[in-house]
Image (cartoon, rainbow, N blue to C red; front, side, top):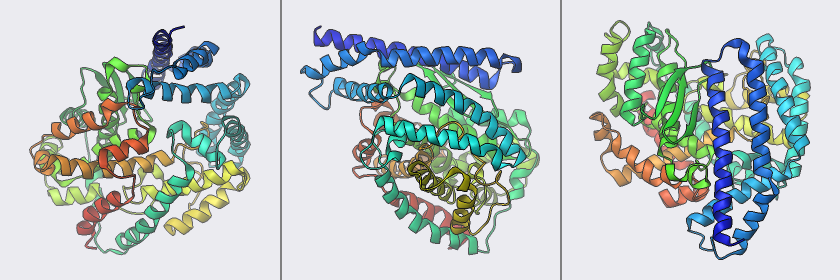
Length: 503
Ligand code: ZN
């Protein structure tokens, strides 16, 4: 077959499998928003069918032949071309998929479905022993998976690569160690400060309808396109980019807590703006796909934290918030509100953690996961190891497994290797933002005036439109002229929290 024909056929096939995947995505969105409770068994059948068809499409021998034809041709020899980027990433995806036997894929799906159920019950009952056998099964299967995929230095690399293509455990260890060394003294200084925000401001009455209206107003202002997207309610918020013109974000409302829905909406809208900014003409191909989970998370955290928890943002939005919530915020000063949404204190639960301590939660998980995958840590010893590390990192001992090693769903889902992408997201966000400020001049002045289009356009051009043209690390070097570093993030934290806490 001629190589150009082979390339078009290759793209046709990956697009088709992306279409199938987006059908599953829509069913998944429906399952978590509107599906009636009794529909769950039938939905599981639908999802299993789509997953099997998808795996078959991605591992079809003809796909390997098409790839080989294109790779042997002059097509894609120019490493900077569209073709080269598409072929590189399709190859990566194909190689990973064919190395996993159907038995292993099916067994992982079966075990993790039941493990999630077991985890939910175990967390509710605060009973690690009930989850332990499932954790043992999941870890054993993931160790098998890592062996099947292969790695050059440590098996954790093989799992990490699923979420952060091209990243290695060694690189991340280095960046996280530098981050930790700088973060610990900052967090201790904040803990020792006498200055404390009035958190109760955020726990007053925030009527649901106003929260929704205000959240939509902010999401629209930062650039989420509601003509190509929706906002709905769910228990565990997420963003699902279904394809060109259709991106679904979700949130949950708490009438007695302002932060949950509002910052959740900004966060998911940040993910959504990335999805909406991917080039539609490349839908289904790597060039139309997000670079990595770390880069995805950088986009959500940039809007949620770097922008959404900043003073200039609230100089614009606070008067509007006061009009939306007159009884809660009518008598509150902007400074008090700003301090309250930037409260830093060690806590047990990752998802409730502030911007500074959050990363310590991730480093803890990153270290334990590596030990689990290497076999240095047995699942039975996880609670002890968790508490010991927690004490070392935070000076606190979790009062229960539910507030300790049982708090997250990830391990039950087989998601070992996923956690580091959250902190990578924070670091990438700070580094991108530092560069955007250099490129765009007076961004704070723009925010004060309620204008966010300059920043959104910059992100569209520098990050969103390139899809998977570059791997995350290379993208970071291209956008910021430097490799990923913890420094911009630390500078950002010091500049923000220094004045607030008088340190
Ligand atoms: Zn996120």
